[in-house]
Length: 163
Image 1 (cartoon, rainbow, N blue to C red):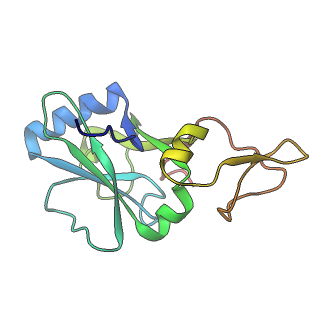
Image 2: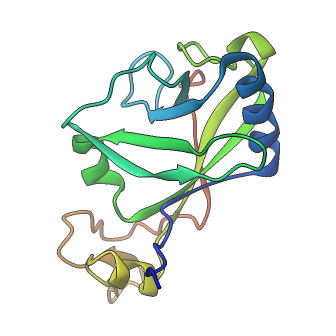
């Protein structure tokens, strides 16, 4: 029996509805998490084959959306080094982004909601366990991401176009 793979990425039902709509028009889809160009850090959705990935990209996972082919989600390796301790959820909101993502003509834009991985997820991915410092601020052991006095919110929103 194959071992279950722990996901790093998910999709909200609203975003899944948009993906079904877009796939009906454009065929199979994929995401690439933008590194700051054009629309900040918004996830960009493309028809498969329109955006080329390579050795500098990390496959975060494939979104299983009922009724369409799995939607692979990629991020550049350099950006992944900053985000590897987070679980990402792709959502959709009203408003047009300023990038090249195919949902723009619909008057919507995809965005990322993130949370820190929990202890079990960190262990499963072979990452340092969270450490609580004397100030009570969460840090990440051995990650280079610990920031004294900074407590990350449980759910943060990342999407471009607004600064």
